[in-house]
Each structure stands twice: as structure tokens, then as C-alpha cells.
Image 1 (tube, one colour):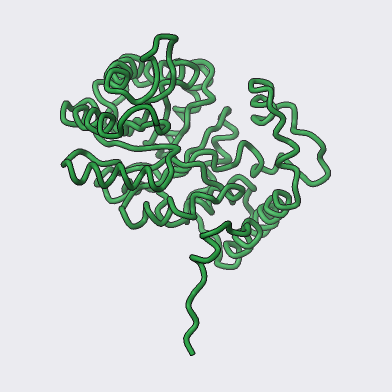
Image 2 (cartoon, helix red, strand yellow):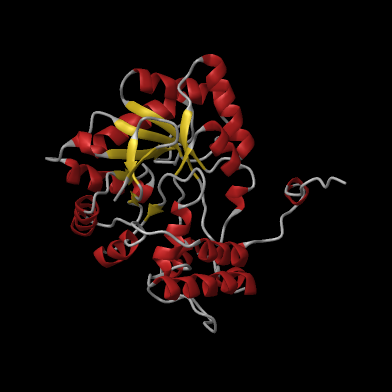
Length: 332
């Protein structure tokens, strides 16, 4: 697995990042972590709110006895971890408490990439950024990242950090895949111009780009991530996904996979790996077999024709003003 710079920073990370949200116990989680690092993976992403801290704990127990400097560990802050008024959000009080709790659970002295999990509209952004800056200066955090923000929120944060001399965000973790390309409207170009590394989550769209879903199906597979989400949330997402637009993308991924001698998952991940500003898609395998499949996304390239087929199938009509902004002036 190749190593890439995270945006314009000097930090080198593996071209795939291992997400740990689906870790349920030490045995399964440690098996996936072992296989990922044996394949050259160095970049691991978690969050304090994943399984209410259990994901960080599983990773922390695995870290014991390993050379910490060989790994880039990323976690997040924002999620509500208790019932007290300050047990969530991005206030100074919560961030300072949350970082100490994450360090304890991870069994480490520092976090390589500390990310704000969501925008907090109830806390002044100055308070959040000033607090994050103190964590870098104290050596508890090496780099800062954001997730689930709008382009205007990210730009405001970058400009404010630049003006105040604070550590800026150097990484963005957005929802981005062949079925959800909205990040390209503003976030992608912003990250390119500002040198922000992009680490997309849900690169396989909750299993929809893995080959499990085929035309003619009338419900989600029983063992799928989508089925588990529906059971947890009580939401039925099949109807909104069961559209011609979705199946056109699924068909194109299948066609390119057959042509390239790859699996659908590998094709969907490969497409992201070749997108501008993307440093490392975050894979979330639950089993060693799924990890092996995901690892097959590296070491080869899509042809220009294959890329064009995927992008044509996944293109959507742009809303205003993006439809106008993509037009080129004509000269007579």
C-alpha cells in the first residue's frame, strides 16, 4: 500500500484508512487491524462516540506493545457521551474533557489527527478553534480535521485560524461516493485550493456499491449494513434508494468491475482514490474477507474510458447555482 501526504502537510498516511466504527469485540477488531497493518496500512480512524467509547478501547488494547510512531491514529470529538449538559458539542469544557477520555481509551499519549465530528451551532467557532489550538501546542494532538461541515463553515474556520495564528484544519472527512457526489459542488474545490486532505467516509455507500444489490431486488439483504441501520434507527431507506438513478450507478460499477477483472467494491474505492484532493478513503470492513476485498483497490488504475463511464452514470442534474457555475462563456 502506498503512502500519501495528508493534504499539504508533511504527514504520511496509507492510501486507505481503516475505519473502526463496526468493531464489536477485541477478537474481530484485532484480526482486522493485524491484517490491515500487515498489508502496509498505517492510518486508522475512530471516534469517541463509536459504541460509546468501545471502538477506541478495542483499538487502544491493540496498540499496546506496538510501535506507536508507525501508526497515524485519528479520532473525533462532538458526540454526546453522557446525560450532563456539557457531555457533548464543541465547547472548551467538553473538548478538554473528551480529549483526555479518548487518550485514556486509546492508551496513547497523543492523537495524530483530532477531528470535530459535526459543526456545533451553539458554540462560537472562536472558542472551538482556540481550544483545539491549545491541544496542538500542548502536544496532545498533532493535526486537526473537520467532518460533516459545509464549505462556508470550513472556509470560515480556515480564515479565522489564519487570522488568529491558530492551528488550522488540514483534513476533511465528508460523505462522498459514487452515489453521493454533493461534496464535489463546493467542498472538493475548496479542499483543493486550501491544500486540505480529503478522507471520504462511506465510500461504498453502506454496501450499495459492493455487488450485494442488484436490479429486481425488493428489500435489503438481511445481513447487510443497511438492514442493521434500519433496525437500529427504525428508518426504512429502501424506497429512497430503489430508483433508476441508483441502479444506473450500480450497473456501471458492475460493468467496469467485469471489464477490469475487479470486484465492485474495488472499482468504487479506486474511483475515489483517483479523485482530486482525496488522500485516503475510509474503509469499514467487518471481516477479514471484506478487508481483503477492499485492499484490492490499490495497485492499479481505471482507464479514462472506465472513469468516464462511472462519472456519466453517477452524474446528477445540478441545482442552482451550481448548474450556472459549470457553464463556460462562449466567445464569438
